[in-house]
Length: 312
Image (cartoon, rainbow, N blue to C red; front, top):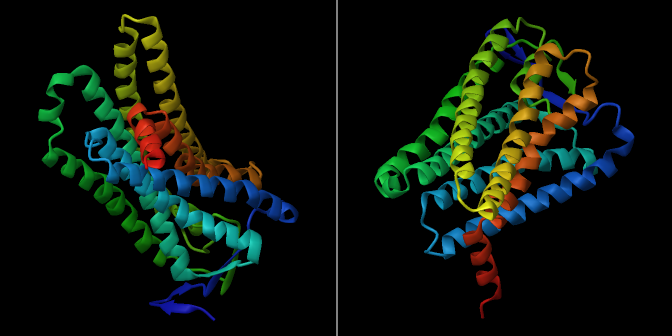
């Protein structure tokens, strides 16, 4: 049975088969996924708690860090529980509407993550190069405006995907698919209709994604220039270590996501399990690393965490 809407046939359910070729070791694969997810939940929850409790952490950096932790909690929770349900409870079936909703949330939160990483890079650039003007540049109104851009632009870019997906016909009532099929092109490729417009729109969306990456990279180039001018050798090493870890997290986020996007279009010879494992990296690894890199390694956060959990 199909859902019918003006000659457009939608499947009743998607049957998510997990990681094709590795079904026999799903239980073992679930252990690192679950561990990383728990780290993401605990780490981001602690960051949010500390920032909320400690009134001294009112700088723009901590404001953006709170937004990042919120997005990380949402992004990982949108994807990992479904994955663990497949691995642990054989919960393979998901109805069409839920699948499209999950697609929207994953793409929207991924876009928000890219936006907030850019905002944090800009904040560090302003703090280093125009330190004395920081309060006048990043005012409350500016922070609210940046926050609205972080949320609104990814949502506006993702909404047309829902319309495009609902316009696609499917030739089966129950569609078998690997996880995550909830990527836009992952769902589109399962249809029996023409998906050229989906590819074009996907390129349009990814251009904004790449633009964020370029602007983030430019910000860190200027930050690096400032770091190399520090008079103290130890200060340079410490700053380079911090910037290097930040850039590492950004690469972990961007490289798998761009790889997944390109693989859907050009990587037909890449084994499916490699594509799926790499695609899952940007959904679960950055949310677990961000609290460590941006939180524990930040002196103020580290001191506040120790204070909150050790004070009587």
